[in-house]
Length: 168
Ligand SMILES: [Zn+2]
Image (tube, rainbow, N blue to C red; front, side):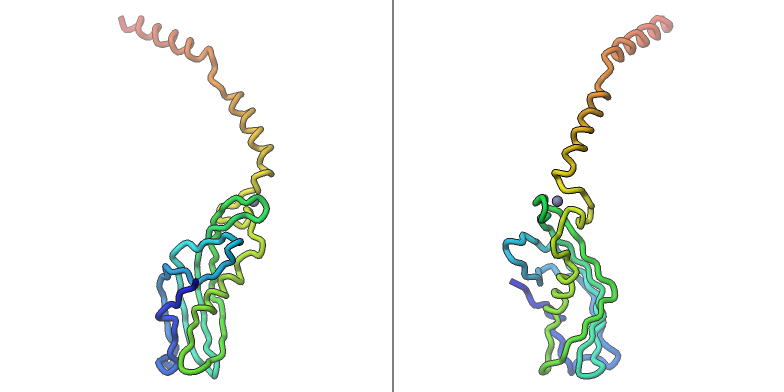
């Protein structure tokens, strides 16, 4: 269910001649995802909008940023992706007295969401989980090599006792 954002319901007659500037955060999700996609909006959505109406269209210049949790389509690992849009240009035909630009903003962000999101699209890029199995094996071998040197403790004891002898 997508919410409508109050200041995004633009009354054409109240638009200043030199345009309307809006900025802020939205905590309600304006996005509609299919349940099987398992994509979740992480609040807030940041926006800076410059809205003008030069002719019969409404023109929006938008800076937008929103984050989402999603499942990798390859290995199903859940990751986070941040979509950042700078200076996106939207042009929508004017109908009636008011235009709710909420669906246009949502669409603009979703258009920039990867079609088949994978681990490599995440904010913290990783390889898919089965690709890293081999690396985990290497890590294990490395940690065995670095295991405690059994002689180290004995060496410490010797060093300590010789220092104590010097003191006394
Ligand atoms: Zn993956």
